[in-house]
Amino acid sequence: MKSLLILFIFLSASGLFAQPKMAAITIDDLPFVRMGLFSNKELSQKTDKLLTALQTQNAPATGFVNMSKVYNAGELDSARYNLLRQWPGKGFDLGNHTFSHYDYNEVSCSDFVNDIEKNEALVNGMLKEYQKTMVYFRHPYLHRGNSEAKADSLADYLRGRNYTEAPVTIDNAEWIFAAAYDSVLRTNDQKIIAQVGNEYIHYMESKLRYYEGQSEKLFGRNIRQILLIHANSLNSDYMGDLLQMFVKNGYSFISLQTALQDGSYKTPDLYYRNGGISWLDRWALTQGKSRDFFKNEPGCPVSVMKLAQVESE
Ligand SMILES: [Zn+2]
Image (tube, rainbow, N blue to C red; front, side, top):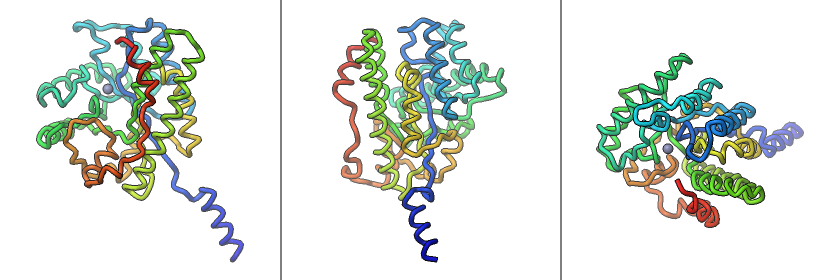
């Protein structure tokens, strides 16, 4: 009996009885960020590298599309269309991120809804070929509405149109690292390029641990996390390292659908300010948590912000 108890204590301490950690990967601004910097061939290779890294780790990512990047003045850009087709072609799901990447804080609900439907017709038209339709909606800038009435109008519309909102728990400054990375890529200085890449993984690990802690404080457990990143050069080159970092921290990868089965996603969000923030932060603010609750959030290094600013769109 005593030896059984010792075995139990050993197994508990070793983490074998611990709740498995799970994360869903979501990737925004498809087909690709800053497409003008690269040739069609480069974009195709970068997308292939990104998706191959996800497949290698069995990570079922969902990509969120802005069709304005594929249509120029109403004309289809066939190279960019084919770039987007690589995603469903390799079995990845696509979601709606509006046609124009509108900021809901800046436009009316009816303009925003028209933009969602414009995107919907084009993306679903493409997905027909794969017998799929979009299920998820991701708010550009994570703006759900900066007043209760505006947030409710959009949420009601999305529900009525059979969209599931795609929350984010691990929000981060990856987009700043990505701008810095595109900027240093042009220098061809391999040392600096690798420096930004490695710093990115280090930063994302600190962010992952921060949000694990926030989840523990709010729910007493690590909920199924949802990561937001973008389709860019940085993730094309570092997706393998990023996923390995998650694995090293005890994670396995799940679909957005599986993540949303976690009961935590039913928590009310009554945050109606201008910021685009993590759902963990939204829930915490809704519950009236004080400033202290949010302390020690890792920030983006100043050196990376400086490199990102020299980048011209
Ligand atoms: Zn976006």
